[in-house]
Image 1 (cartoon, rainbow, N blue to C red):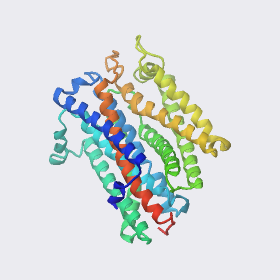
Image 2 (cartoon, helix red, strand yellow; image 1 turned 45 degrees about the horizontal axis):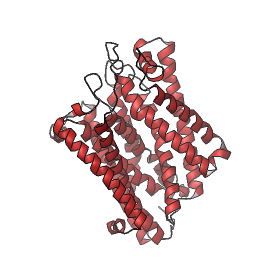
Image 3 (tube, rainbow, N blue to C red; image 1 turned 30 degrees about the horizontal axis):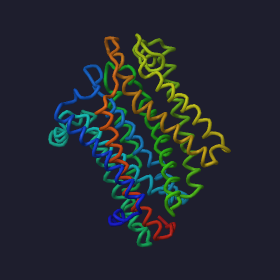
Image 4 (tube, rainbow, N blue to C red; image 1 turned 90 degrees about the horizontal axis):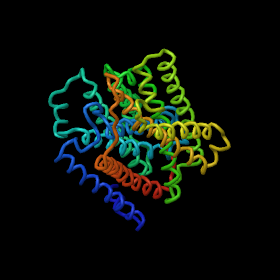
Length: 390
């Protein structure tokens, strides 16, 4: 089926070329970083994780969100998700690819990643994060490809694939839980030292990932004959609404714990992010944009009349996705490092090379996603979108 990605319209190839150029610019900047070192980035002694790890954390959630389609479709035989589930699985693949690239970009010597496999340390969370990410990538590749191949042939997927489908459910939850443990297990970082951090990660994942999927599904409908179905999109919209409510609730719990208890280490990070601290307010505008977008999008998703209008639904999903990207892909990371354990404020802001590498990795991710979606859409168009008994 790979050959289907090599055939397309002028617009398709223009999009591929555009993504290729962005990816090439990112690679060029990465080679400069590899030669010069991480001093090229805005990271420093106090902020050792920056934009790269923020994107990794956010995209792990996007990858994990595929489980919100797999559970209803495969466990509860919810046939409404029969068409859209492949889009979710392929989105998970591209998200994991980007996660791995961001990890490599954050390493001064990326070849040392092999030490994780050559000298495994089960007591280290990064070891388990590597295991679950690679495993999840393999499972989604296998499940997505086998089910799509069966669809192309007009037959039901083979029975041997079912255990892998069921395995993907706890595995999806594990990839974001382990990622949360990377933060929650670090002593001296009060902002991350929370028992509900993993729950916050999962709630934001189950909101942000499906929100992006809704946007992608509507784009696919517009540019091709493949339609995931209005009922499926609305069902995903309800999932996004519930998950976003849980995410906002969990964030509210963190605010209460920090300020009502009067724990300085926890409260100072929130103050830095939302009001500024010691004259430093670099992230304040971004965090308030995130807060406003979260509130507005949540209201829009909870009002049925607004959610059922696909125009306003897309707007709500865009705002929600942007809100979570700011909060989780930027604020969460920086807030954990600023102020430092000595209560000193040493701010961080990404440099231009760092930003271009990030854009380049996102371009590679969307390039992978475009090729996978091209294959899936072509197969679905050839089979006239026939719903099969899975």
